[in-house]
Amino acid sequence: MPDTKAGKTNDLATATKKTAKKSPRKRLDRGEREKLIVEEAIRFFAEVGFEGQTRELAKRLGVTQPLLYRYFPSKEDLVERVYQEVFVRRWQPHWEELVVDTSIPLKERLTRFYCEYVDAIFTYEWVRIFMFAGLKGVNINRRYLTIIQDKLLIPLCTELRAMAGLPSPDDLPLTAREIEMAWLLHGGIYYIAIRKFVYSLPIPEDLDAIIAQEVETFLNGATSSMKAFYNNAKTPDKRK
Amino acid sequence: MPDTKAGKTNDLATATKKTAKKSPRKRLDRGEREKLIVEEAIRFFAEVGFEGQTRELAKRLGVTQPLLYRYFPSKEDLVERVYQEVFVRRWQPHWEELVVDTSIPLKERLTRFYCEYVDAIFTYEWVRIFMFAGLKGVNINRRYLTIIQDKLLIPLCTELRAMAGLPSPDDLPLTAREIEMAWLLHGGIYYIAIRKFVYSLPIPEDLDAIIAQEVETFLNGATSSMKAFYNNAKTPDKRK
DNA sequence: AGGGTTAGTTATCGTTTGATTAACAATGAA
DNA sequence: TTCATTGTTAATCAAACGATAACTAACCCT
Image (cartoon, protein in one colour):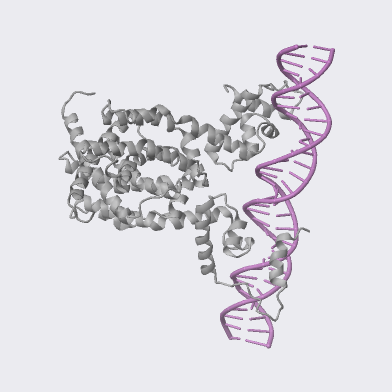
């Protein structure tokens, strides 16, 4: 009965003569099409959130909505696929080796890591999808941030201990406060991405220089604080 | 607001049976009811985002959905009201004086400010609604963060200049890099709230102590960096 | 060439959702 | 008691939304 929208597509299909080149229907093999769908879904959900509608997504893909359901049994499955594609793909295992590679000075190591990290992570899609997932309560965020803490921040704290001439975490466990200090650096840097991709604020173009500076600022401050902490710890004035 | 939930369940119970005990229909005057609606809307939208449905909101309020439309002409108006209520209310004008009060040492001043700031801002409602609004592209975020930059970060940079014995911004304008350094502190601290309210991660309880430490760490690092920057700037390499 | 496999479309179903209306019930102050 | 105000019940509308089945056409193989 209501053929307003259907009319448009019908026009395209039926108005063209059968003799004319009337093949707007592009036929791709499964893998190809699936890839296109996932890529567009990433962009789409990053923009509007996971409440974005399958019809709108299909329109952006230039295909019909039911086609999506021939590739993914449900919208939820597609969303799940988007998570996988965005998150598991971008963490570079070699980073874990880089941050503990004591043959490189800590400052250079951290700077290099964060420059690479920023290259991989500071994208519209990654930042916003990660944020949407967090707000939705998907536990993939916690898993990811656990990696950040275990593979990045704790090694960093360990190194800071050494730099300040303090006992290793094996002898004296890291305190929440030390780990929090490392989060200051990580959060401060990541917040640049939030400003850009969530709040649409301008950020400097020379990110590498900014990162180098922030790493330096942090390391300077952290070593001072660690030493102060050490002095406090040496004086046995507090709790048992 | 004390027993709204009890009322809700009662409604549910009595709605099916009209013969049961008379539903405690609470009759409030306009201002009162409106306040209740807005408060619950804040909680509700903070939890599920602005796509949350008016029917669900009404259910949580223990009232019927059409009642909402006797207080707000449309859902969008209610959302707009939520923004106003959450954001304009919580910025304390006296902070602007605090951060430039040179009679207090900078470290203490910053610590005191951030402790108060955290008390006011680190709430489930504020953090999540601010994030949802940002993702949605509402420009209220940009306005707010402009205030942060102008009233907090720039004064902080000015002070850092003085501490490092550098010329005042009046003589030598602040660089993007210096402002970025201040964002490192602010972002690092705010990221604690994101970890808690967006990613549902545990954070330390003694936030005040953490903040004091992070302010100290930052100030130590920033002054070192500023001096290094000063040495670079002193070498006249290309400026006329 | 033709038959079968399968990518893609059309048409539609059943729900949900924002929004609105009309009629009625309860409350409280004059 | 009267009567304006607050709130409910019930119903409805139109649009939006996820999902499905049945049909159509492009491509491959022998």
